[in-house]
Image (cartoon, rainbow, N blue to C red; front, top):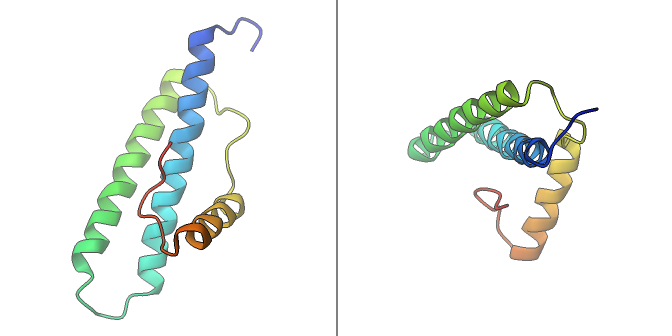
Length: 99
């Protein structure tokens, strides 16, 4: 970015964080799909799908505003490893990622 500003850097940081939240929400939906045992988890599944759609919309808005895809986006494997560490630390799967 030859002519970047501080606000561009902040927007880029927010976009990277939004991508992390989006990917975590997607992975949560996928985990619920894999664990689908016909139990009473329909509410949890609907909440996870709604969170996924919301984070997708936010990510798209930020990417459009930024005008490019920033470097340094987390990969699925990196995020899975981070979530596994959080599960180990807390003993439970965190429902969402806090910034």
